[in-house]
Amino acid sequence: MLTNTNLLKKLREYEKDKITASMHRKLNDYFKKSTFNYETIRGVNKATGNLFMWVEAMKLYYEVNKKIEPLRRELKSARAKLDAAKKELESI
Image (cartoon, rainbow, N blue to C red; front, side):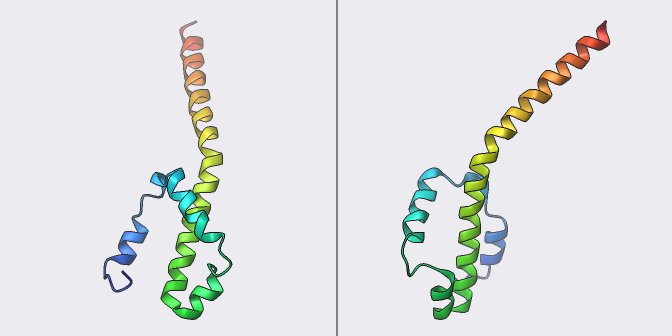
C-alpha cells in the first residue's frame, strides 16, 4: 500500500464525510491498544507513522463532524425559515 504511487492522491481525495459509525468503532478497537500509538508505529517505519497520523485525523474528523452535523441541519432549516419570512415580509 505504501508503495502505491497514487496513495497521496487517494488520501487527499478520501471522502471523509462517508466514514460510518461501524468504521469508527473498528478504529476505536485499534486505538484502545497500548501499542497502537504514533511513537510505536513511527519507530517501526516513518511513512507508516505519517499514515497513522492521517488515520487519527480522520477518526477525530468523524467525532467532531458527528457533533456538528445536527447543528448544520438546524442552521439549514433556520435559513429556510428566514428566507420564507423575508419573502412574506416583501409581499406585505
